[in-house]
Image (cartoon, rainbow, N blue to C red; front, top):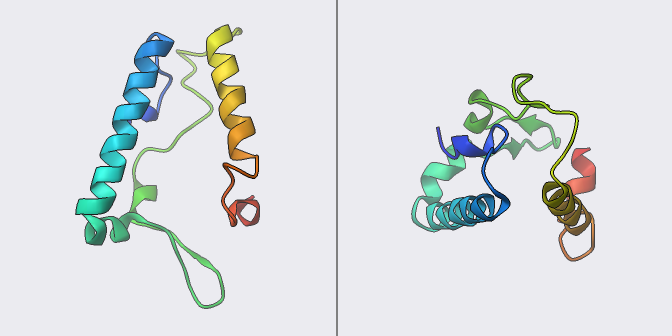
Length: 104
């Protein structure tokens, strides 16, 4: 499975997590360029009535609310700041995609 490291809680330092995410993003973009036909099998699609046809990516492991073995009652301040930064970005005009509100 691709990008398994993104499924669970990362226990690395924030600087290391930044490098991991940048590496995954680079690999993702490279795969989109070089393996476009293969990636179509994994993507979700819509039929003519806008019903979701689930892609193969959904057959793998899914993100959860966290593994109980790793859950804590506190968050790292840098991690919370990063999460809030990304949340605000993806909900802003600059980071939002036109269809995201339809998926909620």
